[in-house]
Length: 101
View 1 (spheres, rainbow, N blue to C red):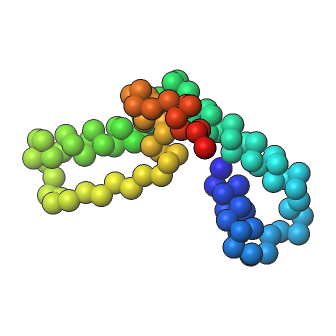
View 2: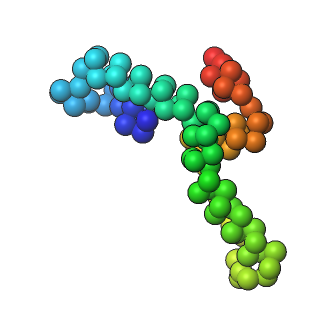
View 3: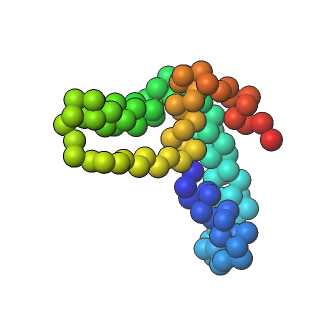
């Protein structure tokens, strides 16, 4: 998905694209991008994708609760590919909502 988004941004910014890159490549990348976005909204796959982030968050919270950290502040940055699985996992949104245009 990162490759598709990078090439798409480069196209709109007028940057040169690889000479071998053609419309068929773009359609294939877009298909894989859309398929991946559909997968991350699936319950089981969302669970797999969300687990590392949620474990890390739990560990951070437990270290604060048990007073085992000297950190005064923690920042956690997320991308839509991290948030979507968590939102669908906890049933806070739906596939229809996320794909609405």
